[in-house]
Length: 130
Image (cartoon, rainbow, N blue to C red; front, side):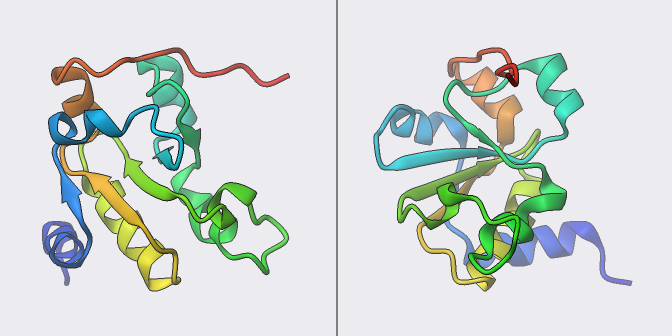
């Protein structure tokens, strides 16, 4: 059986990544989209990076593929993407998947949202639909 820690290590070997403290300066940059991969319950409980685009992990491939009926324009924007989850494991795997699908400019927070909070990054509430 392949272990998750090995899968994350393999992803990190090919995907650009850095701790949140090093990527704080990208927040608010016009051509950068932070992508929150966490479960909606995590967003409700912990908040999220203000202005981040929420993409539940289970929808990632469907939202990236421009031929999918679920494709989202954010992923066809040509912008740079910084994926994040709670601690950097889901985002590592997701960033690798996005790269494998041909999405360019993908990186991830190696220490996730927890690292973002520890580095003093801004946190806002999950935007309400409507």
